[in-house]
Image (cartoon, rainbow, N blue to C red; front, side):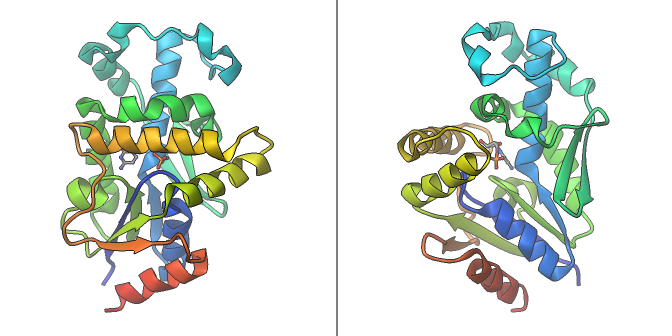
Length: 237
Ligand code: DC
């Protein structure tokens, strides 16, 4: 039987890497739902600035976000004008916005900065949750996010809630950023992670929280391979 596996947890808790490897091990499709919220954020930034490119982080002071851009008409029109597609490749999930590959843009710091408020908007969530349900309806999917086990697939066959200490998460994220040639200190990254966790957990719509029947795995002291093995074994029980 092809199952639906939900992996939720806070930012940088290792969900994506773990989910991708679990999917590979099981021959399932991996779906990173955070990438979908990020793609909407890219579309929103472009629409706000009526400019077809991402603003570099150095321009962030110049970036004014009109209040009306949170207005429901603005968001609903935006959602009507976009198409988000996820394609599987040997390098993992590729995210397309209106036919263009935005897999790199969605990781830009400015997108990370705005994705939490954008993902708290209920019309954005309704729009993406419907697509996520469609993508997972036949099973054979490992889906990661914040609300997969609570809202998107409350009847998922296996629900995992991945956590790690903020220090450990910040350390991992800083190493990733440095490897990409970006400047970052562990303390800065930790503060941003905590702020995003607070935002994601306290929002009204589908906040980040552990489903009652979810299995919590603290991976602060686990290697990726160890946690993948734990999850793969859980699918066999
Ligand atoms: O996993 P990530 O950091 O790429 O997610 C980006 C943001 O998207 C995160 O701050 C919260 C939001 N998100 C969400 O609200 N629900 C999901 N299922 C996935 C992500």
